[in-house]
Length: 323
Ligand code: PBG
Image (cartoon, rainbow, N blue to C red; front, side):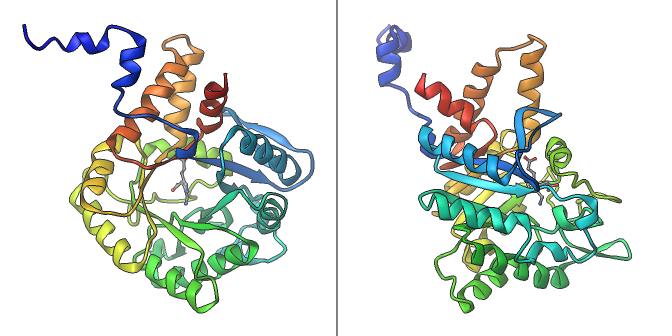
């Protein structure tokens, strides 16, 4: 046999040399959940190891992560029902705790890259990403609200805004609004191909943001569709997105690869809450080795073509690298 592929697997040193994909802490954006109050750190029941922090403790968490090499954070707020309304008004109240926390993170840690979420669901009494009228999600009317939210987040110091709402035309709309208001430097990471997925449930627990009626299928994509992701990506590129995101990640590696092969923008992938919780639950039951399953999953996402990974495992990964 002239070709014996096993020769390149015979020692750890050689295996390391021939490794085609390598993960680095620099690949990650760490999603963090924020709540109002002081000195609060509440574990999300369906996401062991993941907490909802009040601003003071979120700042400590950011500092700890920065010291481990995680430099980018996607911050999501959880609002009590009393702050929610039909128009998501709280999302652009300059004194709301979410915007104040973003200001504070940027003031104390200017080197941290802060991404914010643009969608109505955490603030909406209907629990939808857009404005609901007679059971329908209104597209263009929602854009105006997303616009106010975006400007408020940009004013608070967001480096990247992440429209996760899936309304048509929002990237172009938000890009011009940002430019007209002096925020030319604020980037847009578009949730380009965001699928209507069963894997978001633990996140909705974390934020108490599940839809009050219906589902998200009239705006999030059908898991059956691949070509549609190409169309969404073309639109986002044309509308000025800086990054294209695929979400969820693990059941959509083909979508990551497709966008990687067809577009020159950086591709990010959101390793979502359910993907995290499944591994944690199986590990807890002793059915698999959670750490190895985590590393294998993250590697697969990068191998498929993602330059950037949003993952609840980011900190755990960074801790392992340090060890
Ligand atoms: C809402 C939003 C969701 C996630 C990020 N932004 C949930 C949804 O669309 O219902 C999910 C993230 C996760 O599951 O980790 N705009």
